[in-house]
Amino acid sequence: MGWKWLGGLLIFLGLFVLYFFRDPERAIPAEPGAVVSPADGRVVEIVNEPHNGEAGRRVSIFLSIWDVHVQRAPVAGTVAAVDYRPGRFYAALRARASAENEQNVISLATPRGTLVFKQIAGAIARRVLCWKKPGEEVSLGERVGIIRFGSRVDVWLPLAAEVAVRRGQKVQGGASILAKWNSTA
Image 1: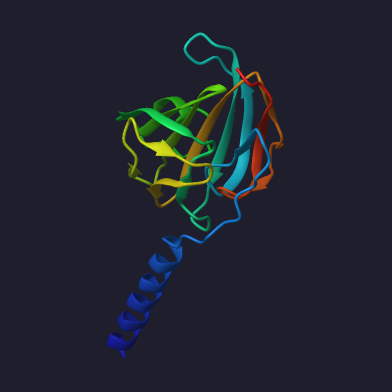
Image 2: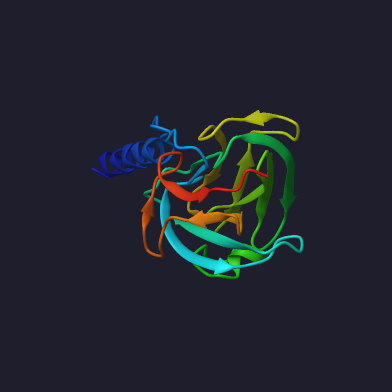
């Protein structure tokens, strides 16, 4: 009897891991100036926040264990930098996770300017992996990395980008339009 329970538990855990690491295809929007969500999840914050002295907004997306955890490029461009920052493992829903948790900060250079997004580890997620290196080109919605087991993704947008989502809204990585970048600098 005990082996059946153990076997059932192991099968359940194996199926959960397969479900967790799923990576479905997505229909990438073709709208000019579209900034797509880099992750599946729920928008938990939209705040004014400068980056390197430039005014802008931060949109934070919380990924529960039920969301797809593969991140996608929010815009097409060149990977200017991937900056790994060790840190804490606060619950990803907490605002201080954006500044203090372990993260990869990915800067994309585009004809319109720089866009920055972060893969942020949570209390359970202890691994942030970026598959791209500086100098590599990425297309809109292209897969760029994964965060394992619950997390948060932040996107910093310059003021020229008009946020198209609201707090509490559910978004899909590569498919949901997060903002519209109208500037053609």
